[in-house]
Length: 389
Picture 1 (cartoon, rainbow, N blue to C red):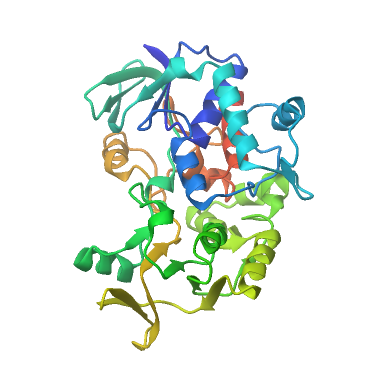
Picture 2 (cartoon, rainbow, N blue to C red):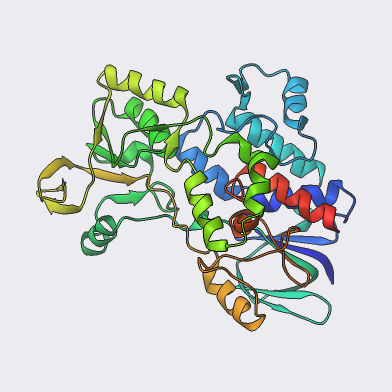
């Protein structure tokens, strides 16, 4: 029997594994990190590569390793140039990813890696057993569920309906089957006004100059981070944990997140492209799409044509519903696990959901607050669990 089973090999799961191993709470032959992909952070790499994100939004002290200055030291040792941006020392995506690979190699994570998709989990006398789609079973004394909403791209109703009816060139940028971005039919319309949309617009305006339009429902929301830095520490966390109503906690999280926002430098870069006429930006909400003469006609609530386009790329984020719902729902019912009205887990301060069962990431946000899904949230969650052992 294993000591630990960690479900999810993305940012959250890998941070959990690093903290467990580096704290000496386990050795690499004792955990299993279960993920549907062949290697760590595969989904993260896929999503960031699509939009060609040059720098992370978070500062250099937010990464997967235990020592906050590990990434800075790694970059200094490699003697790379231009690997941090701005006053918050935001790391380049390349240096962040290479540091992750270095950490995984250093910890020999591949020994613990199990490729597979979880379809069920159940409590046993000694711990937890999970079953994978390939019929393999794993038993562990403790189970950590570190899955996120990244497998749940959000499609607006009009886009979903159009795709069902026509199967035309409408894609979510984080769909796994998105075509090569150099092979798209122009003109191209990007739906969404958040950070992913802007990164993508900057990328595509170089590939298809004068042929890219961004349609967004609201003016740009400009913030350095996706929530107030006060959420990183006790200033905002302590009052949050004092809220007894989980519905109010959910409302606080929604209010605290700077949803669909972009940092100032990205806004400036986009506006430069707009001034040069390389792309267009419009504040308008699409309500329907009609296939006509080989093009898609996008319309507003009054059926007025906004524009005609060749390809639609949705940069509309992810559904915030409970991740892993298909296999988690039976686990919740059969083990009487506590959940709030929003469907998310009610956990202890040590992020324990049941005997030997822990959560990190999105599943822990009613305890961790709005930073829960972020790298900083991954670090704090792993620290809480490790310190409770």
